[in-house]
Length: 352
Image (tube, rainbow, N blue to C red):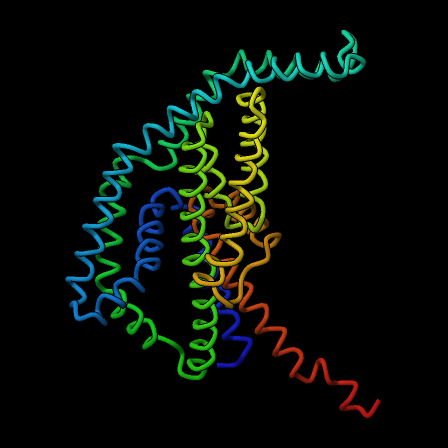
């Protein structure tokens, strides 16, 4: 087949894949999630195999540990998280009024009855007061709508179990389907994509989980109200460098200002928690878990999450990082081919 014919067939295949994702996004959600879980846990299964376990035994051990962790989270962490989230939303109007009183005391000129700041704070307080319950219910309802309880409890673990059990055989089968003329190049690109995903997805998600746990536990030990919500949220978005710690730190310090105003040194402790988290992440967690693998630029990552989320909903957000990594690898491959090809060297070939 000519290059033009190959490009046409690959383009048709890509278009069909995009169409299927667009039409069947909600149906594919548990299967995409199960595949992501299996990919994430495959190195653990491989390590257990090297320790002498069979693939079946390794998969069973991982499944039992995952079930225990899920039950523990469902009984302890998740109820507390949603209770604190609802309480934080309900408390927001009070914080807005306290901020208004503070500004009125410290900067009276800004709080004149007809000033923009006064009017804005009044509008925010009224909006939060009127919609606090609705916002809390919407957040909780949306969470359970996105992650349907029945589907994720039943389908995702089953899909992840069987994919993890047969992961090596599936990879070998797919490798056998590669077009012979391009098999070597495709394998090299696949290894590069896997290196990016292994470093970013596995590494960064592990770092995010550790950071979220550290922030949540530390803030709760300090006694900060809503510390669990703030800490876990900061950890969940810490895969974008500095964003999670910065936003989480600002929210936590803001809450600490209201709660510990009479004891300002506690505010310093809250700030020190996020500084310590960044020091630990930068000097120990990221070098150890992510290493020197090729990462994804934060701007490219945000753009990918926005685009795939808008096009394919929650499924798009799940595949955004793998697709961003794949597109990045293929883009670098295309640039290398261009720099080594006649289009780039054409002026040299003509003697100019």
